[in-house]
Image (cartoon, rainbow, N blue to C red):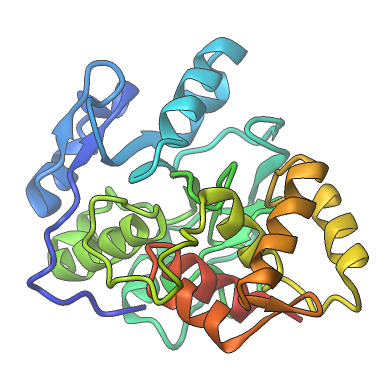
Length: 284
């Protein structure tokens, strides 16, 4: 788990749906000052919701939560309990019952909660590696989805963050949630000046292409653009994607479907840096 500097402002944390008034929410109110949200929270931050509440909502109700989560700086986090059924929104996923508790020998916080973990996740989502996204047996613990590289995130975890155990791990829980907030691309954060010519200011679409190029070693521009259209992570219209790639090449941020040193620098100095790190860690 990444250690969060104590000087960084902590994200706002809300409890949504039935968790807002459930007895399990009291632990989160005590440990991380979580506040109940009667409806959708008003701004940026993390909203925790029981997975079963989301699963049992109708399509319109689920879509409302998804739409809320995709604004920059917002996180919807589904936590146990879950129903054992397949879900299709925001993309296919499933929570299955575990037959035995998992282990995470290198993560004391996860190990403290492991005896109470009853589910494991299935789905072709991004794995939140910096949060201990997989257990030692490589089953999924915490995963997330975002519509675009500049969106907020829809996350799911098997960790029972409402457990009495977290009373002894309040700082670790706050760090875990702060790291999750960092993945959401909070655009209110102050970033370093971007080292590019003043005549070219990359748009969110340009950053989508840059991040996509981190997902694999593409043999050509055509292969990279074709893979982008089939991507389960990114979505960008083909003509616009090709135009963005040409502009990135013109400004020496990309060469032969690979990021140049300047391309890597511009990502490192942007608020997409945490997401870029995740993609590079997962790249084959």
